[in-house]
Amino acid sequence: EAQVTQNPRYLITVTGKKLTVTCSQNMNHEYMSWYRQDPGLGLRQIYYSMNVEVTDKGDVPEGYKVSRKEKRNFPLILESPSPNQTSLYFCASSSTTTNEKLFFGSGTQLSVL
Amino acid sequence: AQTVTQSQPEMSVQEAETVTLSCTYDTSENNYYLFWYKQPPSRQMILVIRQEAYKQQNATENRFSVNFQKAAKSFSLKISDSQLGDTAMYFCAFMLYFGNEKLTFGTGTRLTIIP
Image 1 (cartoon, chains in turn blue, purple):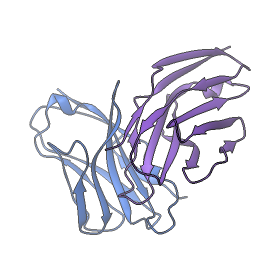
Image 2 (cartoon, rainbow over the protein chains, first blue to last red):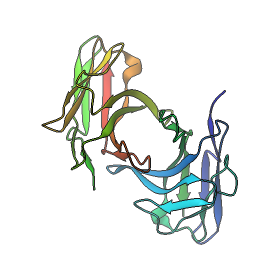
Image 3 (tube, rainbow over the protein chains, first blue to last red):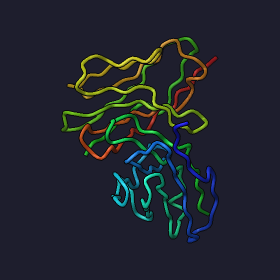
């Protein structure tokens, strides 16, 4: 089954404790992206990657890092989380060659205390 | 930069009735896609419908249809014969045809279908 898998689905952590949210897709998609969703703000793009070893900032990249060492994986790293990063996070992927729809993961609800 | 505006934070409608969700956008580009996504309580993002800006014909998917007015930069979603399972948050989104695949989202409309 074609899917984007995010882990974990829920995460509670404390300020300053480094964490990684994993994202993996099984569709051989070139494009992957991270969004955060906050009430009243919709979804905003954090980082994106057009292919392996190619990443770029989205609209709200501060406090986040990403890497794209393999085509299927695109982890989101919070080196020193702060309470304002409490949010619902989505990973998404698509094929840039077929221009098909964006596939979303199931989301990760992060709470930083 | 592109912006998407959804001016109705919340709406409710009786089951089996028709409801229209509004969306306006701003762009100086001519080639783009518009989308409606549904987010039920499970939080999953589900694509409801997609419209290519170069197509004059409005997209339709079963009970869901859009009214795309390119000159007015308006993209409303009509849900006919609404069902309890339509209760969700609905997001309007914009993507450039030649770009980095980035979706620009509106702030969402929370739709409740009343039994």
